[in-house]
Length: 346
Image 1 (cartoon, rainbow, N blue to C red):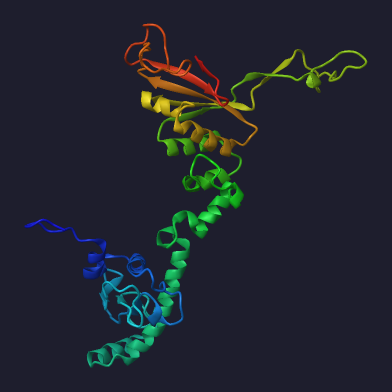
Image 2: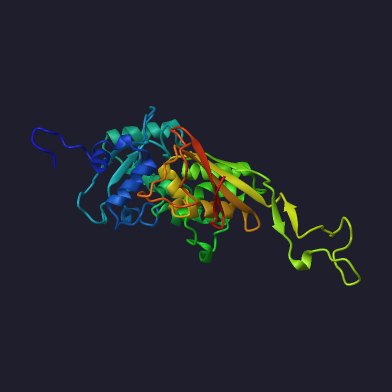
């Protein structure tokens, strides 16, 4: 309640009741359904008088600036407007009028009869106008998340987007540290194949709002098991040159590993992306869902103004502790953490 000598700010409901022409038609219907939650939604029944609102189309020959002309018969405090719903007069999609299919002489006749207080023909046409406009609203409501009465993650569109993400089955949903609803924005990138480094950068940069760059084809040595090593002799194996023979107990692999460069990061952001932070597992889940189980990756954090290490403060050895006096304000240092939580400094 406003204090004396001060005006209260009108609510959305007040604006809808006093100035309905300021609203788009479908949004006004949604607001009326919120005002009367126990009423039957618009277009969901055979009898229009049982619905939350009755829609009538104005008959006119001039151009109108808005979808809605007026809102009448609104009973405040009613839980459900049974047999006496609000009346919403609209300026579009009428059988008669400047936008209707009826010839203009019929429109002029209806206008003249309304002036003479005879609205029987107009009321008859409004029976069809209400049904046609309700069908239009149901179509828009089905394909626009903003008009759906359900939460966005429970709509049919969200169900289809989860299928593109590979999370269509219930057993696969809500298993990541990232909310499934946050993944819906990136369904197109996850669905498009083949996946690319640019697609992964777009997802991570958009989700975390920091600079993340992908370094592709980072080589590393991979050990060979004894069953895969070359042995010479009659009982040897993997002896064909160019087809399987190897020299040594390890091979150089440059196809299945990449790096993610994050930063520059502040001290607070660094703590958040370390294995002790909340964003570390989210980063792993987003990346793993995109690249699959066969690719390995490591993380490199570029830190702005790294803090000095003292015995009194809380530091994590190998992650955010630096020895020596060579670090000055403005320096950047790199912290490297692989996917299996083995931190090293470089």
